Each structure stands twice: as C-alpha cells, then as structure tokens.
Length: 588
Image 1: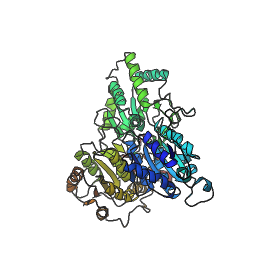
Image 2 (image 1 turned 180 degrees about the vertical axis):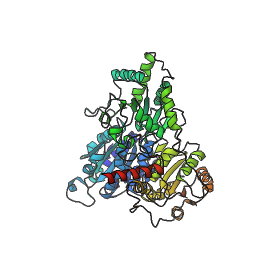
Image 3 (image 1 turned 135 degrees about the vertical axis):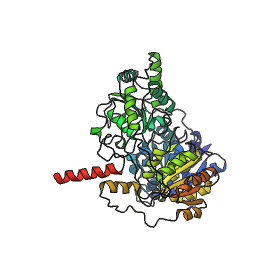
Image 4 (image 1 turned 90 degrees about the vertical axis):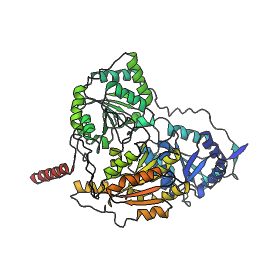
C-alpha cells in the first residue's frame, strides 16, 4: 500500500514506539495533524496540546528525563518553530534526547519570504545535536530513523526534522513505506566501551590516592549507572559529591554523600574538592558553576574523567586519565577489573581524609531557624520532602527556589529531580512537570517555582486542566526576582534594579480561573498541612502560593571569580568581603 508523507510520518512514530507527542498545530503541519487525529482515535498515539511551543518542548524534556524514551514534539513553521528554540537549546545544554518535528512552507516557496517561513535549520544549528531539512518524500522514513538514533545514543540531545508541507500532502505524492531496520552511519559512531588500558591506569591512580573525591553528574543518570556508581563509591569508601544535574545518582541519605558541590554547594563538598589529590569525574563536565575560578580549582588534584562525549574531556580541566565511553559500561568494566585483580580496598585508608571532611560537615552550612512569623523558603522544601517521604518527582524553575530545592529536598533515586541546569530557563518548571506526570501517571509530581519564573509559562495551567494532571505547584513567592536581587545585594551595592515584582497577580484566583485549587499560605504553622492536603489529593492540581521571606538569600555561595575555599557561609561573610574589597579599591 502506498502512503502519503503524513501517513509515513505516523508509521515512523509507531515504529519507534512513540505513544505520546507534545505539540501545537499550525498551517504547515495540518496534514501531519490530520493523520495524528486518526492515529489518536485508533488509540495508537496520544497528542498533548500545549498552550505554547516552548511549553511543548519543555514537557517533552520532562517526559524524556523521567522515562526511557526520547521526548517528541511537533510545531508549525515560522513563529511556531522559533517559539520552540528556547526549549531546544535547553535540551541541548542538558543532553536531553528529543526529536522535534517542525513544518515548513512548501518547497517551491522556501527562500521567498513566504508567510510564516523561517530558516529553522539555520537558526537551530548551534543548539541541536543534528538537524535535517527533508527534501523529498522518500527521505522521510530514513531521516526519522536517523533522528531517533542520533537523539538517543552517545551523548543524547535534540534533533530537529524540518518537513516542507507539500511532502505531507496526500494529493501530491504517495510511495511505498519501508522503515529501515538497521542503521549504519559512518560519520556517527559513539564510543561505548572504555579503553582497558586507561581503566587499569585509573584503578592504579585510585590505589595511590590519599584524598580522593568521587564527583558524579547527569551522565550517570542518563546512562542508568546509579547502581554501578554506588557500588564503586561504597567499595572504596569514597566521599561522593553530585552536580546539580546529578542529584539522585548517589543516595543522599548515604553517610558517604557529602552533598552537592559548586556555587551553592555544601562546604564539605567544595572544600573536599579543593583539597583533594584525585578527582574521579563520572559523567560531568567541570562547568563554571561547579569549578568557580578554574585557576583556583582543586590545585593539587589529578583527574580521572569518564564521559561518553570526547569533546567534554579536558575542555575545562585537564584530564590526567581520560576514559571515553558510556558511563555504565566503563563503571562495569572498572568493577570487573577490580574483581579480576582481586583488589580488596582498605576502607580505613581514608580515615584521616574523612576526619578532615567531618570538621567541615560540623559547620552544618545548611542549618536555618524557622520562626513563628515569616516562612522561610528552606522550610517549605524541607516540609515537602517530609510529606512526600523524599519520593516525589520534583521539577523546578530557575532561581533561588531551584537552589533551595537542590539543597533541601533529599533525592535518593535517579530521575526524580528535573531542572534546567545548563541554560537556566525560567518557565521550565511547570511544563516539565506536565511531561513528568504524563510519563509517570500515578506518581506524585511537584513543581517548585518562584513568582517570576511561574509567569513565564503559566498558560500551561490550561493544559493541566484539559488532561487532568494532579500536579503540586509550590510557589515560593518573595515578590522579587530572587537570585538576581541576591547578586544585586552582594555585588551592586543593593541597587535592586527592576527586580521587585510589582503588580503580581492573585495566584489563588488565577489558579481557580483555570479550574484548579489555589491556596495562599502566610504562616509557618500552616505549611505542613497545606502541603500534605495537596499531595494527598490525587485528582486535582493544587497551586500553593507561599509568602516567603522577601530578602532571604541562598547560602553557601561561591562568588564569581572565587575558589572553592572562598565561600560565603552567611550574610556576615558577604558584608566582610564587601568591606575588604572597598578598602582595597581605596588603597589602590
């Protein structure tokens, strides 16, 4: 039987076992949507109508990050495609497997400034793993096969497929459908297995270290290597730290876990990294929010760097022993080699190192006092962790609330924490939480957000209502763009330029207008009950608007250009530092 381009598109999705697709219709994709309509009626593919293309892509990200499938979304040409670019860039920065299908004007109108025409292939080239402009109907199936393969193998990432409208028109052409079973791409062959010589060398380096740190990132979660990482950490009694993206890949309740590192990481994690003599980096990339000033970062440490992306190795920090390969495969090979060599690590070998780390842990850098009057943001996250037994899926937006979530919600499983790490996209949280809920129907899903971020994609409350998503939205409302205000307080002499959110909406009424449950919480004594009531209601979305401390700050903090041993632990540290800098400037 001969099929149209639109019918072939549906068959490709079915061949890739796609059951959920997020999108927003428009003129250039109407033939595709017509076939999606039929496929949905046949019970083959469910289409989720977002309220904005950015929301559709973020929802696909949330779906991909918490399932074993790539996220899939579809947008129309012109503004539909450009609205999706922020989500595509976000997925690129965080290595999220996405296949994004954009419609385009008919082939003979491309390049003629046609209505809703844009060169989306050119626009997205810097922020996709790969992209395709399909030029004939015969290429739709092989291109779709390549798109899913590229998106989900190696270091995952977004792939864009741009399809001109005339290729999907059944009146133009139909062909026999054949989906490729096998795929060989000479120019794309990711290295999966680590070099055995390098693995043996890594084990030798570990045996010689006196102050090692196991530093793990999002690559551990992507490769499903949490069990192997945990086994290696416990075998050697390593102190273990996670990046923001890696939280949950090592249990936070394990005594060897020393917390998140980086700009708002724990004192013990950052000082351990600074004083270490060996960093075992697994699936992380030494980004600037982790390292601070690279010239001051871990000055005495050698580095073992395990990553599937060879471009990430030695990009920011020189790797003394690079191991290119899939994290799970490499860790399995390391554990097998340790067993084969009959190595039995002496768990007391790092006693002196642990004693030093425990002195930093004793500072209890995340301690806070919750009074009777003003709600602290930390307390809200603490209580959310308590009422969900630390077992919810948590999405966040970007800002202070994101850091509070990372610091105070204790993740013991991978894929439970979903946030925008690399791009730092405000508006990510709500649509990502939607995607999480679609992928994990019966699980508790919370979105921790702020009064600035939530307004970026708040229209997705309509999507939540349409599909009956029982999300828990935790709005930490301090009336400011909190993280920007914090920087203005520390580094711009408290000139709060345009960071005070004047004329905020009544979030309770807004939630109710969309058909959800809204509640304003202003007393600390009401926090736990409000959260528990929301979490226990599995049928409705609850929008909880918490009036939190207006000028609360996130501590600890490494200021830009500082090292891991130069943290602000509290406001007094920031004030002292500001006075010192002022004095130095005057002396100059």
